[in-house]
Length: 420
Image (cartoon, rainbow, N blue to C red; front, top):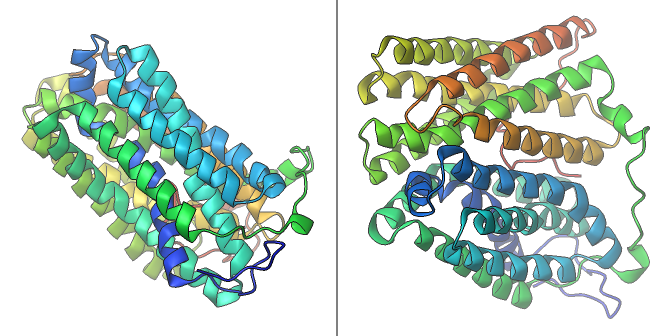
């Protein structure tokens, strides 16, 4: 643990290995809360006697909570310090998980999921702030990079774990596990986390003003952010719909979880490859290629459903390609957008995270309007998002100055935000 002064100011410029590990684990709560329960959506809908959209609203509620958390928790921790708000959020997150596990109705579950998303966001937002308090330069980059890769791994492992839990003990067991995980993270933070923001450094953050929005006002910044948000909306629609139609196509619970995990792995691998080869192409070219693949795959899925040829064998390959293509889009657009944001990068990251989770909360229930067995709404959402993203990318490219190569593609999207 890092030593602190009486006033609470850290006397070291780098978090200890133990503290860095705790911060990394705490940051995993939100993606685990988002992805681990997905294989059990169909079982949940049946037990709570709700439709597909009702179950998908539990996913939307979590994303809305995440959006609100990104907007509010950083400012809250600037005023009251890091330790107290983080511990309070972890405790409430554990209670919310328990309420989810015991929820008698879909309404109670939706409300508890919003609280779970709101407080789970603290693991990302406040943990990032703690690292910024303690580390500078390369040390901070190393810690943030480790957190980024851990966050990228969660969507790969969480759905298979959730699928196995649902198959053995039911969907409520997943929320019981999340409540236990939150409690363990609370205890770990209680032991290992010092206060890293001294009293003299605390301040009331001003509300967002019109000039704060100017960091995303120009076309060269707003267009790639818009494409990023649209791509995340397509991803949210897939995550909300896939557990239903994959079950309807005959996949067992374990198979649903494994499919979600493998598709997430494809996304991460494509994003990593895109990061390595991005310098060989003009800015946003990888994103444009990814959006084109997404549009083509959405058209194939729509055609398969319309012609009655949709089966597990015909559905899984284009679905895999569609999700994998988002790795190029999310990584490249976020890298270019933030590469051009030299001023108020933290504000830009906060606004982008709020927009992505809010838009994902809107597209998720729309993917289920035609029922559990239909792929068409999801394919339509993917296609519309891809077309608007292509327009946004074309606008962004037209606004570039000659020789503009700002940004380097990396694993973006999901819960990976830029450090402030």
